Length: 162
Image (cartoon, rainbow, N blue to C red; front, side, top):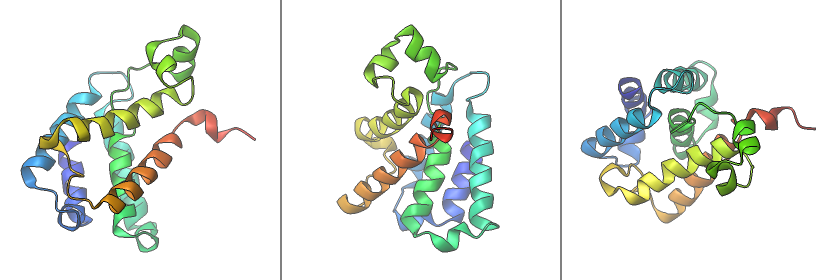
């Protein structure tokens, strides 16, 4: 994950466009890899697969032509962090067991809310890995809104509702 994510963030111009320092990027990539941990499916290998799919959609599917640089950055980051800190349990498990996570997120897309909050909290709490620190206030607001939307869409239960 670290290698491919670093390569794609460079290749798509995100590192240059959003002024991400090398040490900060490397620290953030290590943090992300570590946060995926050793779970059966929702791990760094899965995140790498999703990132590769997003890259293919951007490159060969023509998606990149429809997106602004900040939107491309948000898509790539969302792919990288979409299961960050996953505990290998489903949203239904959390809801039915009344877990701390389900209580925190009121049974609403529990895992997806957790992944999103974990990513943004790490940026605020650890300036040494804050890849977003050079975004303007407006860029950060737009980026955050898009990442939240993208991550919440990974809740499979929302795919089948009327």
